[in-house]
Image (cartoon, rainbow, N blue to C red; front, top):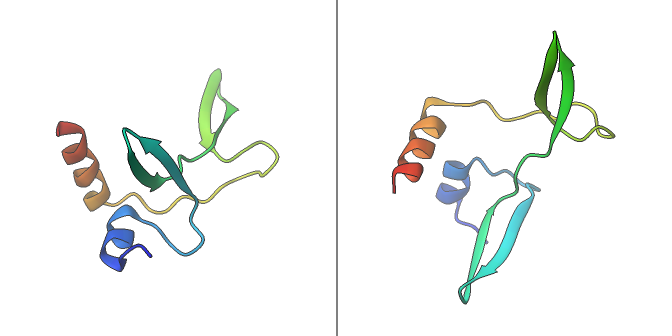
Length: 76
Protein backbone atom coordinates (compact mmCIF):
# COMPACT_ATOMS: atom_id res chain seq x y z
CA UNK A 1 0.00 0.00 0.00
CA UNK A 2 1.24 3.50 -0.84
CA UNK A 3 0.94 5.92 2.11
CA UNK A 4 -1.72 8.62 1.73
CA UNK A 5 0.73 11.54 2.11
CA UNK A 6 2.82 10.15 -0.76
CA UNK A 7 -0.27 9.50 -2.92
CA UNK A 8 -1.42 13.07 -2.31
CA UNK A 9 2.00 14.52 -3.15
CA UNK A 10 2.16 12.53 -6.39
CA UNK A 11 -1.44 13.26 -7.34
CA UNK A 12 -2.42 9.59 -7.30
CA UNK A 13 -6.00 8.49 -6.80
CA UNK A 14 -7.62 5.10 -6.53
CA UNK A 15 -7.20 3.10 -9.72
CA UNK A 16 -4.37 5.33 -11.03
CA UNK A 17 -2.02 3.62 -13.47
CA UNK A 18 1.49 3.04 -12.15
CA UNK A 19 4.70 2.10 -13.92
CA UNK A 20 6.84 -0.50 -12.11
CA UNK A 21 10.42 -1.13 -13.26
CA UNK A 22 13.51 -2.85 -11.90
CA UNK A 23 16.63 -0.72 -12.00
CA UNK A 24 20.00 -1.70 -10.50
CA UNK A 25 18.42 -4.27 -8.19
CA UNK A 26 15.70 -1.90 -6.94
CA UNK A 27 12.03 -1.63 -7.74
CA UNK A 28 10.87 1.81 -8.85
CA UNK A 29 7.19 2.73 -8.84
CA UNK A 30 6.07 5.94 -10.55
CA UNK A 31 2.86 7.39 -11.93
CA UNK A 32 2.43 6.11 -15.48
CA UNK A 33 3.07 8.75 -18.12
CA UNK A 34 0.02 10.32 -19.69
CA UNK A 35 -0.56 8.98 -23.20
CA UNK A 36 -0.50 11.76 -25.81
CA UNK A 37 -1.97 12.14 -29.27
CA UNK A 38 -1.39 14.77 -31.94
CA UNK A 39 -4.27 17.01 -32.96
CA UNK A 40 -4.55 19.71 -35.58
CA UNK A 41 -4.36 23.14 -33.97
CA UNK A 42 -4.52 26.12 -36.28
CA UNK A 43 -1.74 25.95 -38.86
CA UNK A 44 0.16 23.18 -36.99
CA UNK A 45 -0.26 20.32 -34.58
CA UNK A 46 -0.36 20.09 -30.79
CA UNK A 47 -0.06 17.31 -28.24
CA UNK A 48 -3.24 16.49 -26.30
CA UNK A 49 -3.76 13.95 -23.50
CA UNK A 50 -5.35 10.61 -24.36
CA UNK A 51 -5.18 8.04 -27.10
CA UNK A 52 -7.00 8.56 -30.37
CA UNK A 53 -9.38 5.65 -29.70
CA UNK A 54 -10.15 6.87 -26.16
CA UNK A 55 -10.91 10.48 -27.00
CA UNK A 56 -10.35 13.24 -24.48
CA UNK A 57 -8.58 12.36 -21.22
CA UNK A 58 -9.13 14.52 -18.14
CA UNK A 59 -6.01 15.59 -16.30
CA UNK A 60 -5.82 16.67 -12.67
CA UNK A 61 -5.49 20.42 -12.12
CA UNK A 62 -1.93 21.70 -12.32
CA UNK A 63 -1.29 23.32 -8.95
CA UNK A 64 1.52 25.60 -7.78
CA UNK A 65 2.64 22.82 -5.45
CA UNK A 66 2.97 20.32 -8.32
CA UNK A 67 5.01 22.84 -10.34
CA UNK A 68 7.30 23.62 -7.37
CA UNK A 69 7.80 19.91 -6.60
CA UNK A 70 8.59 19.16 -10.24
CA UNK A 71 11.14 21.98 -10.44
CA UNK A 72 12.74 20.82 -7.19
CA UNK A 73 12.97 17.22 -8.43
CA UNK A 74 14.69 18.29 -11.65
CA UNK A 75 17.29 20.27 -9.65
CA UNK A 76 18.38 17.18 -7.69
